[in-house]
Image (tube, rainbow, N blue to C red; front, side, top):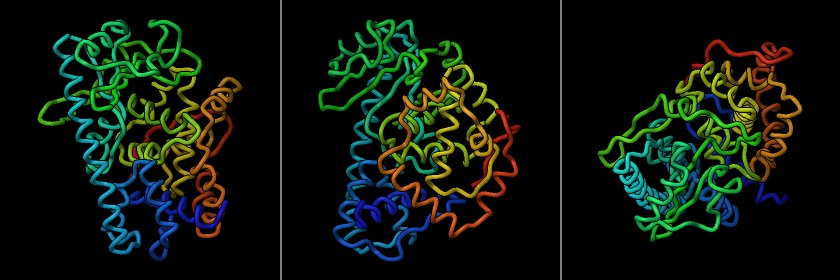
Length: 357
């Protein structure tokens, strides 16, 4: 990997970790050079981090020239404009479902932005995700298609026939996308969770003066963990979601692990996501859930799941080895030794998971 590329990647990860108390990552000592900056800014956009970049520069935590700051603000402004369009789409979709009496929960980006982040404008996203009860597998997509939505080429994500599909993707007239989830996606062993568990508890938030509903915190956290482990290159914004939920005290670890145990791949997804987040952001904060994740030993079925997830390769994985070396040089034992003191064999459950900010 070339030097400029590596510098850009490490700078992007530092931006993703900005504001996380306990992160030992350092921003560059001086403003990035032109050829590095262009690559860096494109990667910031890919990982949906323009809000974090603007905040970091404005706080004096990330060096930038006046022109670079203007470019960062422009990038964030464009991302926010897209987010506003998506929020309007979300209101349209949820209104249609409400009028038809179809229960639903908002997932991922919009829900996390409004329930987990102190400033919702920092967490931008690329589409709208809504969970639908399994008994509306056919009715909900048909309803939205009758309102002008059209199916995308990847209409059915998983399975043959509607009863085995995990969701459908639909597009609005201006190419905005809404994903309807029928059950928890990415359960690679095919074991779904009863609708009563997913739709039992809820968390409310407000968009455009309307009250919307998302899942209970522990269920939202599981979705965040799947997003942080699935795919060839999970976005750094997904890892930041995991860090925000754990360190912000939004989730109860015992409830998380109880919910994760209901899915064959749930616990290994949580362990992988938390470990990757702690390593990627060089987090020195030791909380019970991070200790549990470090000691977790997947069985052979879960190792298959990890192989299916493919882990955080690409930018995240390529930079991790370099970051581990930096952490060893700068931190010595304070980061590693306390964790080892808590490590034992088998699978323990933490008694509490309230993190500190």
